Length: 331
Image (tube, rainbow, N blue to C red; front, side, top):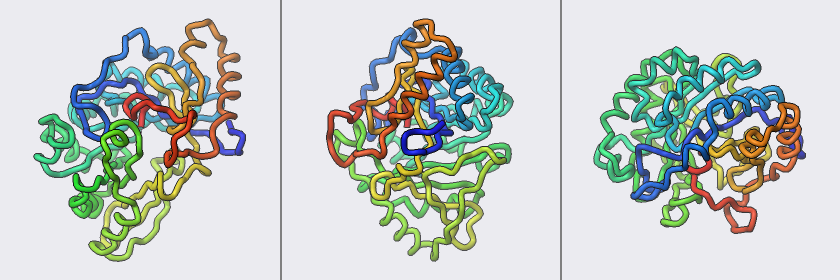
């Protein structure tokens, strides 16, 4: 499946819920959010039907996001169902780690291939300040388990924010020195609370310079794959001397990677979202509940994907900008 710019679309990110068990300051208000009605979100059967259609059109990798995907009941059933779909080679999960430690065995049994752990600090007090929840111990237990887990492709995601956690960049990077983990630094996106509350992300060029000073030359490497299934992503990876793992940088604002974007997103409400910035897409929930056939669904998806924007324009406001927060659309 290709869009009008001949980009090959192989990667689907599915937000299974807008709920989360943390309240990270740059993502979600302290009081939380109004929970979507159960009838308003896609059932697992509807998600699987969407993925079967997309897999037949070339989607190879699926990532489950949220909110926090592990708060949705019986998520392992969805993982198992996704793994059974012909053409789906990788099923991955992005999580805050609070529940992963206790659920990891059942997720592995269901066929989970990869995990991205979102962690912005190694300090318990700062964790509480950022997340507004006293759950640092559970996340550290998950991290310790992931450093020993050989059956998963493990990445860690950190969003450096000026005056919040920018003093921990070296300590977080050192995890990849000591363990074969991909430690990724992601530029703060001007979405939701990150935009309205005035948080300022640390530019990736500054992060690179800081890490070069701490660890020496940052030798470029290609992205390692788990089997042959994980498509090349937006991160640029390096490996300083003596590192068991790698460091990655995602410069969504400074250095756009839109020309190689291979992804679309499915929100919890069933909206097939073509770009994180744009409000363009397709309401698959209405189609599925309106009696659409599989052939008609594929046809509508193909038509929608052709309208995927050439690039994002987060640096400016426009009528095409999606005003929803990250937890509402899936990161």
